[in-house]
Length: 454
Image (cartoon, helix red, strand yellow):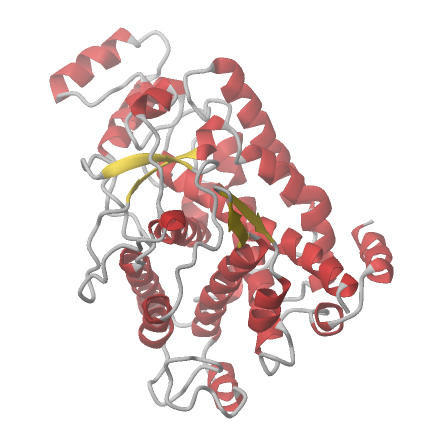
């Protein structure tokens, strides 16, 4: 059925740069662009959009005041649209703000921060509803095992500088933040963390001496010579960068008059970043990396679905009706994902000699963790917010993909010490994937606009 829909959509698709260039099978996997377009735009996007509007997923606790650890702070952007409006505590659902940050079910949220004696007393009080195994698991859960393979530098949610943000009231869009400060952030990510020697220059890099004058031939010769894992790493970062750029092009400040701002798609900005001619073919590669990243995060959601399908897992806000509807919607998303026939096969990664694979995986993890720290160097608060959230979403997806054994061994009726996700990670994972889904949906809108403006 999916193939038939792809054929039908291709007959309707407008011509131009995206239709003629952005097509066919992606590198390093056997899935094609057309199948993802149909699957996302018809099956996933409508559901993930609704899901991320639910209370559990719209409130994100973040510290936007952490100093940049790599260079002197440029100071925060003074443009008014860079500002993030924090959410008053009174507006936060009671189940979110009162519970331990590592818990998300009703039972787990009955255990607030207490001493060992108080915990023992509380566990004794719920003896009739929890087995000894479950009580021990909840106690372990409360302490949370920080030795897990985190791929991100996590904010301290108990810090006085951490605030709740309503993501629906602080949407990701073009704020006017650009130029050397923004370039330095992305340049640091690519040049220092993507396993690239300084003698190889990225195409169209505004800070490189050659500015990529060889049309990227030298860069892509180098990239294809890398092992799969390092090549995948670069494509994930490029895909994330592309997704963010699409959001900025789709929600651009078009007019600002009489105290009312008008936001909408900017076709010229989109062409500048992705047009085949204007980018010397680089734009198409960037967009294909977006599709590749989408497949990676889709695979992570497929892998983690058993974690959420367990009956005792509730996405707890304190409103039973809201929580039930949110869980049902999440399971609908998982059901659609499990029906997708062309998932990325991550088993080919880190599959070599055991010690070499372990060392490469750790290098992979540390490089990505460093990128998450660079997000604290973004000068625009709104850009920093969405950069941190999407980076952590990808980091959580990687954590899931590298925890297959632990997820397979999850107990059915109690939490697990082997694999846990905090509410913070869950919110970032689903919102991060929601941003990728939105990007692919917005690409379809740009196709239509480009056809109208030919």
